[in-house]
Image 1 (cartoon, rainbow, N blue to C red):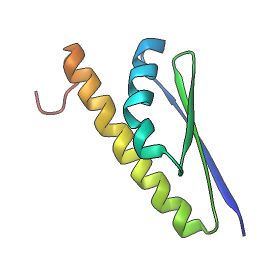
Image 2 (cartoon, helix red, strand yellow):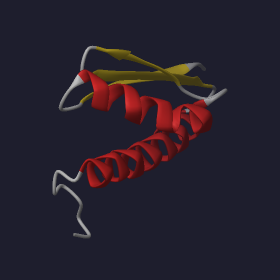
Image 3 (cartoon, one colour):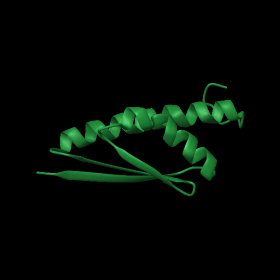
Length: 83
């Protein structure tokens, strides 16, 4: 069985989307295909089982969340949960 997911993450602007996408690209390699469409990151993955796909999605979202947090902190926009 082949299963697929696609997620769209809206960022505040196209620059933010590009920076975040580039930050997670190395971790995505071989597992998740992602691209930027304007201010939206579009990510897609395929796997041979639902469990494997959920694991990939969880890893992707964890990396994405951290990248978004770091970019927001570096930008100094006050969206950091630590500050």
